[in-house]
Length: 215
Image (cartoon, rainbow, N blue to C red; front, side, top):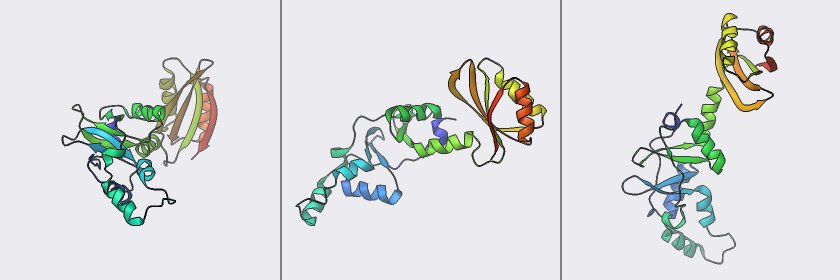
C-alpha cells in the first residue's frame, strides 16, 4: 500500500498571501488541522496548522478594541505565520514509511508531492489509522491470534499452510519488528476455524499461542 492509495487529493491549500481570517474560516469550515501553502506553480512553500492560527490570535486579555483586533488580523498574511521548512513525502512512498516519518517527527500530517515537487495531496494520521485497521482486519469477525514463532525463514508459510489445511481463511496477518530469544510475534486473524482448533494446530507446530480470542 502506497501513500497515493490513502492520501486526500486534491488537497485544500492556501497561498502565502491568503489573509489570516480567510485561512482560519477555511480550516474551520472544512474541519482541517493543517493547510499546505503553495506557490503559483503548485509547489509547497510552507504549512500552517490550527495551532499556528490560534497562537496568532490576540489574547482575551488584550487591551485592543475589537475593531483594532480585526484590523490587525485582516492585515496578517499566512506567509507571516507559516512554517517555512516543511517535511513532504512522495506519492509512491510505502505507507509505513509515511507513518514512521510522522512518528519520528511528531507530526500529524504530510503534504504529498509528485516527482516535480508539486503538491498532489495530503496524508494524515487518520488516513494511517484507517489503513492500519484494515490491514489488521479491524471490524471483521474472526479468531484473532497472537503467536510467538521462530524468527527464521519459512515460519509464515508453515502457519498459513496449517490454517489452510484446517479449512480456515486468513483475513489479516502482521508481525512486530521485535525479536526476543529467537522468536517474533505474529498477529493473525482467521475465519472458518474455531479458536480451539487453531490453538491446538499451531501449538503442535511448536509455536506458542500468547493470546486467542473471537472478535
